[in-house]
Length: 323
Image 1 (cartoon, one colour):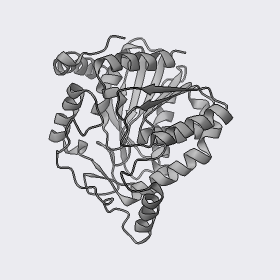
Image 2 (cartoon, rainbow, N blue to C red; image 1 turned 120 degrees about the horizontal axis):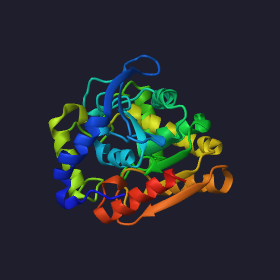
Image 3 (tube, rainbow, N blue to C red; image 1 turned 45 degrees about the vertical axis):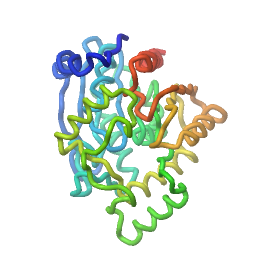
Image 4 (cartoon, rainbow, N blue to C red; image 1 turned 120 degrees about the vertical axis):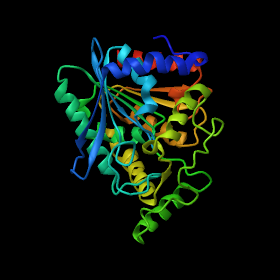
């Protein structure tokens, strides 16, 4: 697969990719798993389909973050579904604060995602069903696969949030404090140190190693309120801790589909040591075949890397789905 080059990135995305996606995209809404609100679902149709890829996006992300990757998937012959999680993008929210990601139970994420998966499987029952899940979406997707292992032909967990990074605060303290804050009625409060969106993120402090890729999304984010989510509530962090426990003690035991786990070299958003432990559990004691890809010179958003890394990365991902 030929990769879009950084030197002409913005022009190519506007004149080629955006037009290509628009011609093959259907945007719509469906009820959440418990009918609390509406999930925003992006559906992209390949010209000559050979499979379906479900994208399970990460914390504070929205569908435009994946335009380039969706383009490659379509070119390779895969229909793509991308549902924005509760509290993200144009999907329903459990708080009025547009900057805050809040959730009442981690199972909501998984149930909502599986509902959209069921829609896609019903639409294309004869096509192989695959998962690409990133960061928080990696945790959601990994649990979804453990609940419905028979649904998935191939699974990619990209910088998966087996355990979120909590900066200089030890994990045990972060998890305990978040649980306590929920018990005293502060579940919807910002985690200490986090703040509302102020458009202050820079390329240097971002999770990207491609300035062109970072800039395109960041400029759109600045202009679009629905994309300006940036912080976690104590309720979110408490539920991330529960996902960590479920993943490490239960989920890995039920996998059957071939799995590729991708780790960035420098990751300030998830604990890479936990990703490695999770992969080791699958490799040593699980049933599924598990491959591990370490990408030197990358940050958390491996799909927003320099051209040379993107060439290796994208083609490795596509080759895995074709196995």
